[in-house]
Image 1 (cartoon, rainbow, N blue to C red):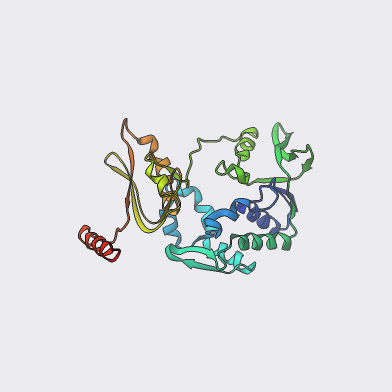
Image 2: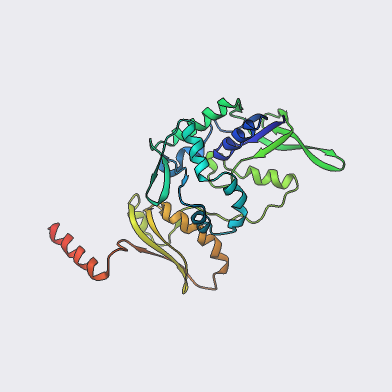
Length: 296
């Protein structure tokens, strides 16, 4: 049995701690925030989109870059096993349009509570308000070998193995401040160029601000650069004080990041919005005239 430290108490950290403890290891979970799952709490507008119930081949089709990297992870612990774990831990789930899986309660806190029950079940030692500032190593046969971590209060915790689950730089106020990248570089790992993905988009036009808070369903968007279409999708979106967001836009943003380096010269990236994609122009005209007449 090894002593394992998991850095980061988000979704990945809790799952990693549970998995290591299930294998019989003594696990210490270190989280710098005042509670576990801080980012998880706000996902899906507080509902927590747990996973997607689509078949595995469909999931891979929706990974815009290097899907082969995820083969072993997806097949080692697929979406059905994620659902089984949460439901067995007391969080019933439901599947909505688009095969999106949510807790029946529509409360992300129930997902967090289920993972915490599993942590207690497998006796994971959880430390909140504990920020790791350095990975400690020692020389063994001329090579650096992990031996523990140093915390912000300069306390050192020895262990045999370490799993870093600190997230990226996506939401600093939840604790995702890029610590993992620094840990990786300091211990000799190569860190490739990072690009934003699954993020809202800023729009140049000011009229978006006037629609701030407006949520749209069953709309279609097309992202185009010059004559090339980078993304097409159907679903939900909303207007913000700086542009657009929502599930449809978050998906589009990944393709924006992927293709941005291919943009030529002065080509503009344009986002086209179709509010009624199921209607022909003629049908839309009739619908508008009818609505105008009824609103007199």
